[in-house]
Amino acid sequence: MKILSKSGLAIVLSTLDGFREQKVRIEQYVTDSEIAASILWDAYLRGDIEGKTIADLGSGTGILGLGALLLGAKRVYFVEIDADAMKIAEKNYNALKSEASIEGEAIFVNKDIFLFNEKTDVVVENPPFGVKKRHADRVFLEKAIEISSITYSLHKIESLGFIEAFCREKNIKFDMLASFSFPLKASLPFHIKRMHRFKVGCFRLRNS
Image: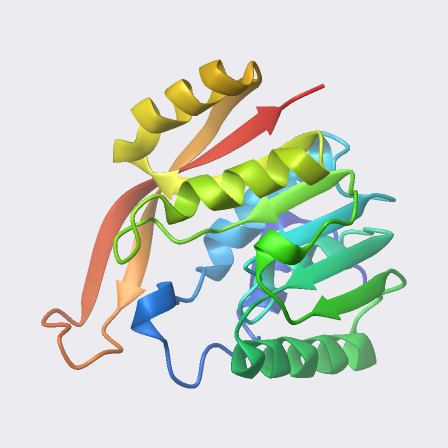
């Protein structure tokens, strides 16, 4: 099976397993398959996926990194601090590899992103939004621009000012490629609504 369209990618990504039990303290939530496919397809059309070495920082259950492999990435590092999430990512990878055309290498790294120092061509990430731990998203951005020249990162639309200030401070360029209505399904005891949506933007940072 070869992925030939954004919709085809979204369909495959929608079959992946999500978190068995989301951990509030590290802001775990499932990245929507349609949003993941949109971001990755845009990156693919820009030449930022095929044949590239990519790091999926805070990879969770692996949706962004696995999508990159489906689109022809040469190598993807899945960097995730939570061992339970990493096991699901590995399971998802093995399931996909048996059914889809994946030739790239998958490397699973169970550690804090702060300790990851491999140089890559591109970073894809859906970092914590800094709700439970202030500036958690900044830590992810700093690591991303340290190891790569191009970063695709999801942030709340309200963080636009922060992204602008960060890029000005680091003397790098950025574009907001798209905005999405991010669905957050009720999965924790304190969630009242069955589905809550909030606006997020995909930002592409370039530091070269």
